Length: 200
Image (cartoon, rainbow, N blue to C red; front, side):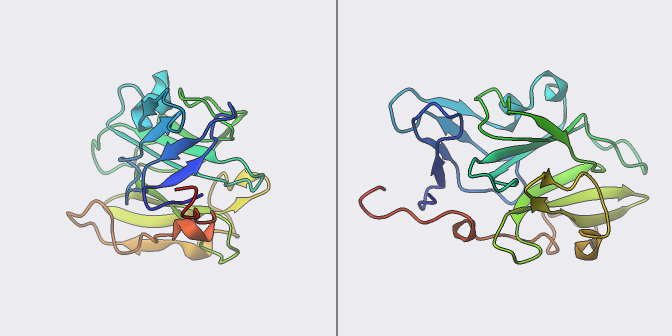
């Protein structure tokens, strides 16, 4: 369900509803409240979900969506160090963690997604199939920035750039804004039914 306050769903398969904050434009502001509906709240942000490999990272970004289309929401998380020059950095963490997943970010399995120095992530629907995809804004090197797609499917997310998703790449001018105009924004209601008034 997608109420005004964000997504409500059982993310960890414990039988109680959890709440995902309204999506941010970069993925840095994600907050998940596990046990939000039963009074045993545990809040987790991207840094909590990244694990030890992302503990010292400068940028830690995360989004939640059912990328593998199996009915369970999945966690995509990436962590990368601070920029250090013209060469793009490889993330310390760049994984799709298939749901259900725990409050420590552990999923049923982890699938690597190849990215270069991600600065923003969001959920999109690039190919208009009404299933979630991933949009990533990152530094490609030598001052070149772009927004790239990783399409969702029954297998999860595309691991890297390929013929399927390359057509959605958009080069973006470097600006002072954290999210460029080339970054798409998906309407969460495209993937989750809205809550009735009775269910909040």
